[in-house]
Image 1 (tube, rainbow, N blue to C red):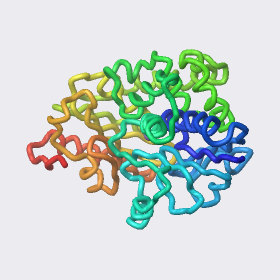
Image 2: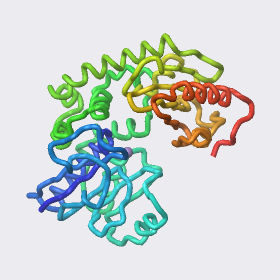
Image 3: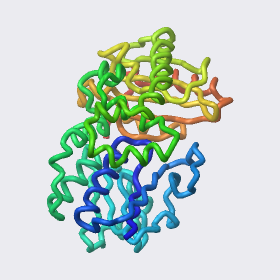
Length: 335
Ligand SMILES: [Mn+2]
């Protein structure tokens, strides 16, 4: 039997969910199953795999198994969707999709936006309703919950990335070879995380990634400015892939907000965040509302505005306005 396991790609929680569901499918659906792992992405993939089904957007053409599961990714109205687990607030693209899910009577589809991770949701629901015991995988579950809800004990942990789980997370998020992620998935239940982080294909790719990460830390250290409650940083003089969003709080553990402007090959981006280590009740702004003013979006505590790469001057201007707003007395009530 072919079991398609489609998961949120380049995401620790997505891959951990795939690993657990694969194990469940072997013990509770078909011991001789052929897994068809497939990554799901919100944007076009940057890698061209040998097989077009490896990774990419979600569409009906992805549901090709005798059994199809979607994990840590949005719902799709399709009778061939058999299993579904998600915890993203944006899980339903339309009211029709939500109604379709609510009318489902199979008992195999689960949504809980309060779950810290999909891996945790999946293990709890499969244990409660389908007799699956995930207690042997407690290390993986523990870290999926911490990573997906950004509940790191301090900024040092989130930036220095010394924990094996966080090194593996970093590798997963920047991996561009689907076959390697596919190889990793079943291993996630067989080896402790420190061994996974030392796998040759992981550690060799990690080295240059961590080197760039530390260059970003140094770039931010020399370019940032603390302004009241906010860490402000304009990084548009250099082109970067992605910048760890916790670096501002690493430099200023007592800061509440961060506004960082970056430039990649394709876009200029303003990233705004409220520190996960600041008291939640002190938050004066709904960041998604601030971002929407400029055509961006996000959540109440983190958001972004994207512009074309050549508009970096405008991006810096917007960033400056946001710093003033975040420090200002005219606050927008938190939702
Ligand atoms: Mn998740």
